[in-house]
Image (cartoon, rainbow, N blue to C red; front, side, top):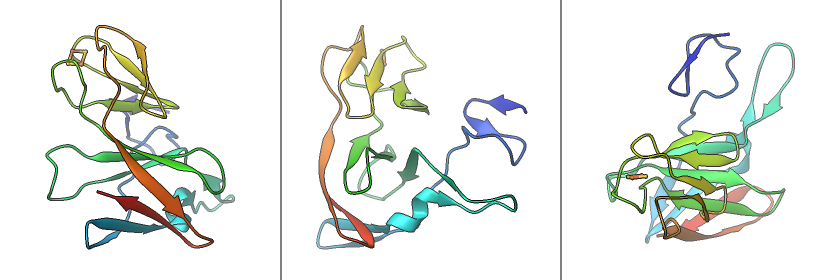
Length: 132
Ligand code: FES
């Protein structure tokens, strides 16, 4: 398996970033929970997170699945000096000076001192809703 910068060169790379399909209406993003399911020939697997890119923000949003009904939606802008973060498992890591954030947007390692921008999320049986 070869992974460079979180982008998988082979299909089996589990850290590859996936941009989820979504719709936006009245400052609310809707995405299906099924976007967290990766269909593979040898069985489905669950993604820890998906990414969303919308016109309103220069940076993508990272949506983490915390459990079946709880999700976190984080702007991937480092609170230190604004570099775009890289998801690595349950953490977001800054390539510029090494800050790390949890999957809830909380600073884990400096030099960043402030948490990430966090969006309110709700969900029902089928969808996840992110309020912008
Ligand atoms: Fe992210 Fe400095 S910009 S640690």
